Amino acid sequence: MSKTEIKALSSADAHKLAPLIAENAQALKRGAPRRPDEFYAERILADKTAEVIGAYEGDQLIGFSVFFDLPELITGLRIGQLDDIYVLPSFRNQGVGRKMIESLEAEGKKRGWLHLRWLVRDKEAPAVALYEKIAEPDRVRSYIIPIDRVAGS
Image (tube, rainbow, N blue to C red; front, side):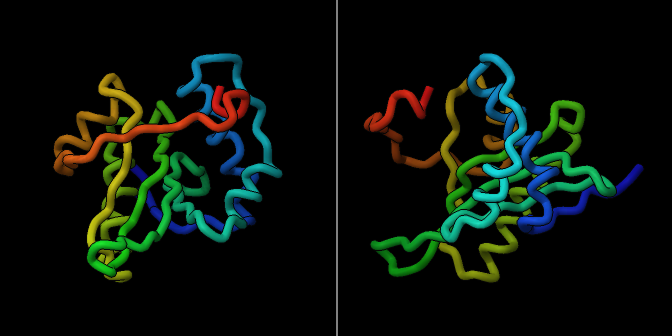
């Protein structure tokens, strides 16, 4: 059995990240499969505000997480905001998602984050069972104002 390694992704990883972004979009939207888009993956990996970590089994990228390092205005500290986490279906229930979250916790300790937070799309998400084991629910609700309905569909 190989060991899962969590590491920061760079633009050199775009060709491995693109198919996972497409699979994640397919899983969330339940529509026609998106084609892997290496240019888009390169843009995400080069973004000045987003950071991406990946879970590797050997040379295979099996999962990723996109996160942000943000200011927390009330305390003057910083927080980590996990935007997305995805693990290939054949690697789920093996602790990969937990390892990525633990990696972000460790990064948060290095950066002095007050906390790591993330939003979950709905209670039916299979990952909620993990989240409820390792985190406490927040007292805040999430609301959105749709700006571009075409982009969000």
